Each structure stands twice: as structure tokens, then as C-alpha cells.
Amino acid sequence: LHLLSRRQRQMCIRDRLDTSTRKNLEILEANREHTKKGSLLWVLDETVTAMGGRALRHWLESPLLNKDEIEKRQNAVEVLVNNNIFRDDLQDMLKTVYDIERLISKVVGGSVNARELTSLKNSLKRLPELKKLIKDIVDKTSDSYFSELYNLLDTLEDVYTLIDKSIIEDAGVTIKEGGIIKDGFSTQVDEYRNASTKGQEWLMELEAKEKERTGIKGKWLRIGYNRVFGYYIEVTNSYKSQVPEDRYIRKQTLAGAERYVTEELKEIEEKILGAKEKLVDLEYDLFCKIREEVALQVIRIQRTAAIISTLDVLCSFATVAVNNGYVKPQITQDGVIDIKNGRHAVVEKALKSEQFIPNNAYLNNDTDKFLIITGPNMAGKSTYMRQIAIITYMAQLGSFVPADSATISIVDRIFTRIGASDDLAT
Image: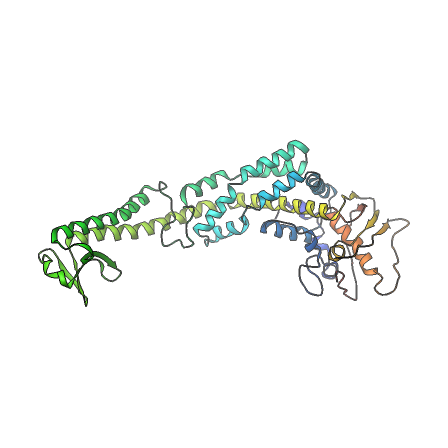
């Protein structure tokens, strides 16, 4: 829920905006093409993680009604606007974090593989460094929101250690073919793996010994394997007269060779194949137990993911504010909306060679309760009306706004009815 408590969720406009208003303000998608481009989301999305992108959509659907909550976000954004180094360091660090939310959902659902667990581990590895960076921000700015995020951030070092000790770094995507558990994590795995590795040495030693015993040198005698017959000793026809019939048992006849087994080879085969099968089964069982242990920490991991996504959205708001010349609006509750040289965020971004012509707006609950906007077609009436709504909307997200200055009194409703459904960005 991206750090929104039940009390905070009751303080947002989400359930108070009707479908027509959402559509006409083009919050999440443009009306004509139904794409992100041309929407407010398009303007504000400078997130660097998938989690941050989802959190931004959630924030856009839920502007806040509580002055303290809005100002808490605003102040955190202001910290990042005024400190480029902190903002850049945060974004650089966040770029190295995988989608923890998606990964933990796969863990809980039982569909995660070893490679994805390693990705989760590599993300958790960055958390102590991230927490230190937030501490630096708190020490320098004393910002209450960053202080709150610092105290809430769980570095999950126990989860990191569990995965780090158990899962091979370059494990494959399959979990039922072995090769996923690290040496030293399980004594039994080490024993089976040792038998499997030593088996190749045993086969090479046996081959050398049989060549010495029979006098058949080079490639004319070799030990091979196939899934049907298992391990065998192959001797070419020109040398099969030298095969000791008392020890060699014929297993298969080929066009140019005979294949045999010996009691010693059977013993080695049993050790090798038995160890391989047991190793694969044991590694899978251990992986399932590790996955279950990580799944038990789902709440902690989700909370940490929510903090990361929150940091990403705050950085995104700050980046957009710096790049587009937005200002921090003053939030009030006195019924006054006073915007100096306001601009429509989406239209302004869509303009390539022209500059958006800014406009003032003043409304209150006494002498200026409403404005009547007149003018010819294509004069900008719809743009003007929507830009006031969107500036107000952005202010209640905790974002900076496109204006020279803005005083925004919190609103609990926005109504928009633009009949022509203009594509303002175009």
C-alpha cells in the first residue's frame, strides 16, 4: 500500500473523483490514443524502478486531503530539488535494485527460481548502503519524512545472508536439475557432489588400468556412457581377441566394436549415478525449504519494497521539478487558489518549438467563487480550465507545480466536463 495507513487512505480523493473527471483530466492516459504519452503520468514519471512506476500510478490515483501529509511529501521533494548530489546518488542506487515486489510475490507463490532468488539477494545487498545514504540526508536536512523512511527501512540482512550462503551465484533457471546449492551449505550435498566429481577420476583411473592389463592402448579401448546401457568399456573389433573373457561381460555388439562391462565398472556406475540422483533430489528439497524461509519474511520485504518505491517517486517529482522549472506550492485550507503564471504541465511538455503562454488564476470562497471563461474556438479555454485543476491536483500529490508561484487551498472534489474531448497535447 506504499506506506499509506488506513487513516491516510481515508485522507485521499481517490474515491471522490468520478470517471468523467479522471478521463477529462487525462491523469493516467491521453484521451485520443489511450496511451501514457500525453497524460499527467507521462509528465511526472521519471522513476527508475518498476516498483516506483507502480507507486507513482497509485499516488496519481489518490491525491491527499490532509495538509500535513501533503507538506511532508513536499518538503522531502524540496530536499531532493535543493540537493542534486543526494538525488543523483539515490537514483543511481535505486537503478541497481530489481523488482523486489514481483520477486517476493513469486517466492510466496512458489514459482521463483534460483536465478531470481539471486536477483533478490543482490537487491537486498544494497539496502545497508541505501539506509546510510538516507541517514546522510536526515543528518544534513533534518527532514521528517526521510527520518521516517530511515527508521522504517529494514535492511533484511538475515534474508540476504540465507540466500547468499545457500544459492550458487550463477545458478540456472531450472530447479529440478541440480547445480543450485553452494558448497559448504549442506554436508550431505557436499558428499554427493564429491562422489559425482570423483566419479570421473575413478573412470579415468579404471580406463588406464584396463589398458595396462589388456595391452590395448590408445583409442582402441575406452570407457563411455549412454542413457540406455549406462557405462561400458568399448573395444574395437581388431583388438577384441585381447579381451579377458573371465572379467569382461559382453553388453552390446556394434558394427566396428564390442561393448563390455566388468564388476568394478558396475560398482563405480552405481556410486556415480546414485550420487547424481540423490544430489538433484536433495538440492531441490533444500531449495524449497530456503524458499519457504524467505516467504515467511514477506511482510518485511514488502515494507522495504514500499519504502524503495516511495523514494523513487520522491526522486521522480524532484527531477521533474528541476527539469521543468516547477515551484513548491503553498498549501492552505482557507479556500483561496492563487496561481501566478501557471502552465498546463502536459501541453507545455508536448510543445517543441513554442513556449507555453502562462496564465494567472484567482479563486476564493467569498468574492471570486467562480470564473466565466469566454473566447473563440482554439483560444485555450479548455486548457486554462484544466491547467488550474491539474495544478491543484499536482499540489495535493505532494508534487511541485508549473507556475511562478501558487497558493492552493485543499479541495475535496474536482469536477470536469469538457464535451469536445480535445487532445490538448496535440
